Image 1 (tube, rainbow, N blue to C red):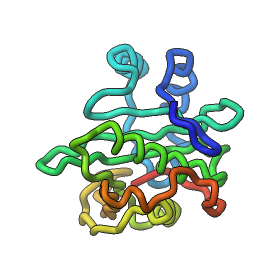
Image 2: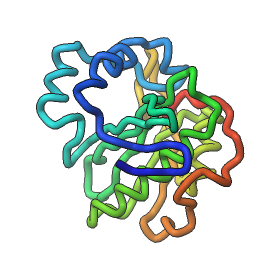
Image 3: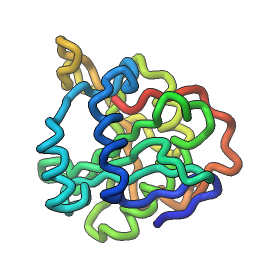
Image 4: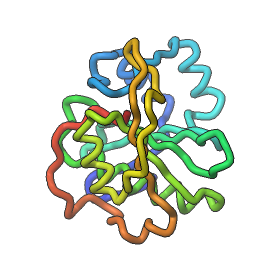
Length: 192
């Protein structure tokens, strides 16, 4: 378990599955920018049985608050290609947004991945250009805007641009380990 000032990150457990799938299947909690892809419950449970939602190329952890409630998720996916980097994503459930959980969880998660993946030199966030809240989170967590991918993401029936924010291993010391000094955040619907 990864411990921050206000949140913990931990692997999902079998006891979490019913609620986790309910949240996964409820598209209304994803906000305007989070991907709408769905998996069947059978596929969802099979993926958990295979690797507990944690593998070498992708993984998801639960974001847990001080009371022990799962308030969202944070995850990674290996980017395909010649660059050894991972794409990070997060989702805080609507009733827990605006409490600073995203920044702290993202910092903890990035530090953990850099500490456990020796070949990884980059972490990145792909963010929709209109997602001002996620842009603020990226900047608050030390990510740098690296460019725009024109029409690089198909979501909600159309091709959309994506801003790429990156964090290098060498920049890790410049970010706080926890969000204790971060300003209160406005609600965040997730990356992309």
